[in-house]
Length: 440
Ligand code: TXA
Ligand code: MG
Image (cartoon, rainbow, N blue to C red; front, side):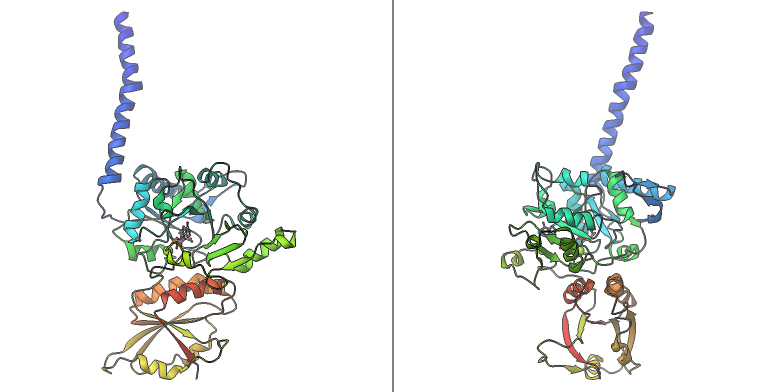
């Protein structure tokens, strides 16, 4: 009887202590290998995710997923992120993001190496719930009233807010040593579900090699980063097509400073502040960096989005065509036909392939006629009256023309209202030259 009891005891010990310990050690070895010793070359797997199969019930932060294939893809992506400490590309409503665990400095460092991103350029942290947002903030921090309003109207969505960094939680690699951390809650069901399933905030810049246009389709990412990534979740084309608006509302004057115009327009921000703040004297001003204010100290630091480094540039030169009459009216203009003549190749034999991006109803198209020595590749962006459509197509236009093998791209300016402000912010940075054109 004693022997029987001993056997049972050994059995229980094996099952409750020995086996789990063995499994724990083997899991740990696999994870350490994947994190620190795994190869940097990957066979890049692209898995389709169906955004329409994911819903977030209003009472819960947990997604409900009706497609088995989408659920499996999300679980695998979460495994890559959480267990292996690897990066995963996922769609957001703005552009595709290259994600890694935000609170794990080793995992986050892989974002920088894969993109070739300078370490002094901080990352945005993505959350799936307000509970997750609060877990990142300094204990007892009171969220400003203006932020409450902006989050009520635009979260989840294309708005990034700067918050004070909690040094006990957010690693310095994320914020490039800044005292603030940029946070947003994406509305794309795949992005939000991935963060919720991983149950961890994800740092994610746009999923492109640093300096290139941001990707708005899985295929853009694949062509750029194939072999450097393990997994791309393909959720179709991103709706907004430009990155989020980055906002700093932490200054003592309470004003809202727009560091990077983006998917949420300045007009939208002004509208909701006016609507929800009833004391007229207390409505914060919305100030756009470089349009309404300058900040020398900030401009010398790379934290200002897109200031220090080359941005949004495809592999070939982009020239900006200025066609909207300038306020001063004194800048020299070039006749379009003369300008086109100057672009022909000198040797006369070879044609130059020129990509043209302009609004669908632009007058410019009348002047893009068959010409000796020029092959035109046209990319109409959308109606002038609908800058959100132009924004949706902008990066796809630059990347599609690059893929077509053009030697040069011409892009026509648009009015800087609504999404036009963000469009021109990107276009100016993409362009190496600008020329004022007379259409005749
Ligand atoms: O829509 C988006 O914002 C996309 C998607 C993937 O969420 N992400 C994105 O990330 O555009 P990225 O890294 O390409 O651009 C983030 C910008 C950077 O230019 C950076 O300078 C700025 O946000 N940023 C991040 N943290 C900041 C901080 N603490 N202070 C000031 N600017 C910051
Ligand atoms: Mg970027």
